[in-house]
Amino acid sequence: MSKTVIAEIESLYDRQGHRRYGLESISQLEHALQTAARAEAESEPAPFIAAALLHDIGQMIAGLGENPAEDGIDNLHEQVGAAWLRERFGEAVCEPVRLHVAAKRYLCATEPAYAASLAPDSVLSLFLQGGPMRDREIAGFLAQPYAQDAVRLRRHDDRAKVPNAQVPPLDHFLACVEALGNERR
Ligand SMILES: [Fe+2]
Image 1: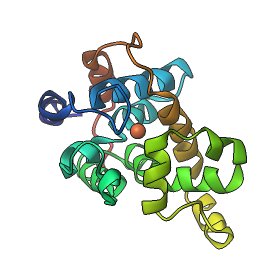
Image 2: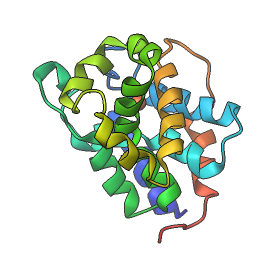
Image 3: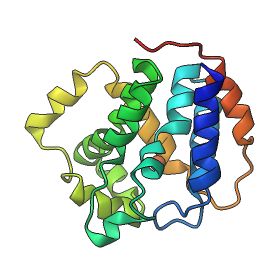
Image 4: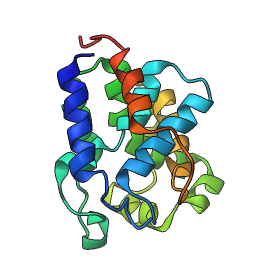
């Protein structure tokens, strides 16, 4: 991956990474690092670790405040983020990001324990995002090549909200992103 893209990502986190992540007592940067650290701890491949790091980058690009769901707004951050990533990365990075909200809707429809474990801000945004997936939507979701990656990403995402967790710094994961090479197709 080019140094320019790495600098763009660094700059986004420099300017916006301190913002609060939803209603949690952690920042966008802490959330991104924790999600990537969980993916790395599970020995996920490099493009997936990059997707984990960058899955909420749309929150920072959209610039709609810390918890737009509180104001009844779905900022479509997964689409904003995936569109930004698509200009710079390959499918294995973009697609899990694009599908990570659909994965939440899928898990809420198929795993009652998952739905019950959602954080309050995630419950609030769920209904703006269409609520649990309807039966007729499920097959279409599962047929997408990166649906299972998105489901795994979602589970890392939901567990990456721990105040003061010790995780590697941004540089560590940016080195992983840089090593990806230019996989954009
Ligand atoms: Fe997230």
